[in-house]
Length: 110
Image (tube, rainbow, N blue to C red; front, side, top):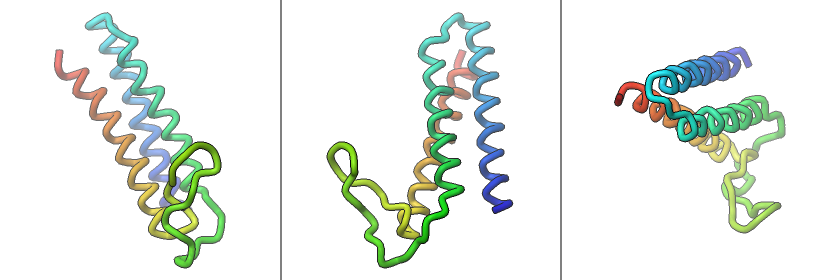
């Protein structure tokens, strides 16, 4: 559980840096609306990462990897399957890193 907490706090630090970069871009370039989307989306994915890291339901390999969604159409990854759990974590962390990199590129590409 301690390792999961470190990962979660690392992404909170990235989120705070992203907010600082957004404010610095706003001061230097005067644009805020497109860049405010990146921290907002990051906050959503941070809450979803917290949900996944502290997920306590029993996992078993016999569960299907993809399940039908309860709301809406389509299928989604099943976190009760160990591979689905790891893929979900990988996707969420990848999106968080991508959003941070986009904000950083906007900051550096004046």
